[in-house]
Image (cartoon, rainbow, N blue to C red; front, side, top):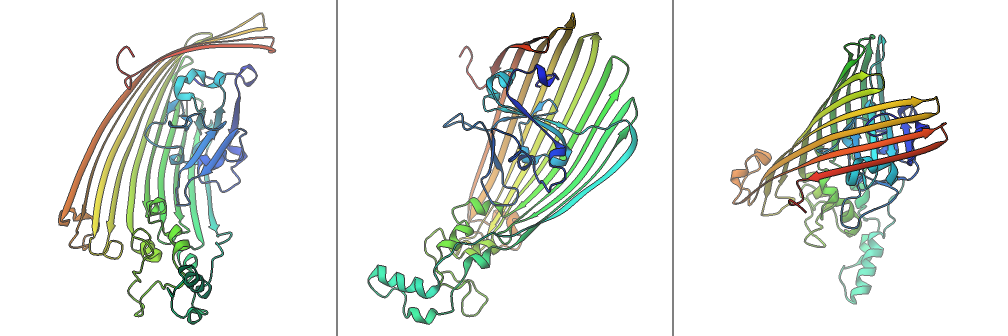
Length: 470
């Protein structure tokens, strides 16, 4: 349970294990939703209704007011650094171990202060090659809408509050109410398709999977698509030496999901906009531009005319070597590299930004490399004394850089957001950051007669985020 395997009955900390069998018959989209309601002490909440919206996971509540409360995620022995739990394919996961208290998370130092989620992906099994397909389609409906005033009642109330005629002849709006929620929100569906192959012999085993996911939003003109591949290979070279190689790649394409968390959120505007207003002018073609505030403009126009995109390419490599020095003493070296290349592109045409069209593009790169070397000694004495000693050296280095170019006063939208040079006013920004951690860990676990347990661990971290001698 962290830097090696131990028997469940020998663990002194608080933890829970979730196997894939617990949710494999249900239409689960993400690892976060797999945890929801299935692990005690773990709260999973959705912060956005947008397709692919990130979930907040809290293990035994919040531990910090200003800092992050996200737990540490470990995938096949490597900590996630450049992407989130939702970016993993839930169908590739074999099990998730959730470490909750100080005793269980101590081996991960301060990084494990908010809890630790240890994820093991699926491996191949000896035997005939197995081909497996798993797919489902979700149909999502809105359980209810806000009950709002009709146009006549709204106009009457507006005049009463103002003490004057703000909206003339309220009775003329009878049966002419604009239901903004019905115009903007719709039923949606999600397609999820998964194909996997697994098998091998006594010397080599493999697991290969590919998946496609298309998530339609309940807000019109929003969606997210995912494409991914995974390959896990385990090779037993001889009785003492074995190696493993895990590869994962994924592309995510999100369209207009950011507007659901922006100030001009059409969902919020659909509640605030007057039911006496119409979505289009009398000609039925041009949008109604009457607004109730500088921020909240015609919500239907915002939803249909916005063009805000994020494209992410994720790749991970994880290799491990396990060598049995002699009976009871094992050395394991684990190295992992993950990368996240992300691009954003947006265009605000004359409808969304009247008389001041805008466009922008951004690009970011994040890389993280981690290496851990683990020495484990296990000994049973007189059939009642069980001793496990673990020594770990671990290093992590992470780099990221970003670049963005934005402009306003765009003179033409013929090439979408690619003609940044046509903006009258332009701004460019960029950034770079790097940090590293070097850690050493020692742990001793002892059990007597499977009834009396003791665990002692000590970890020391050195971080480049602190000044020398601080």
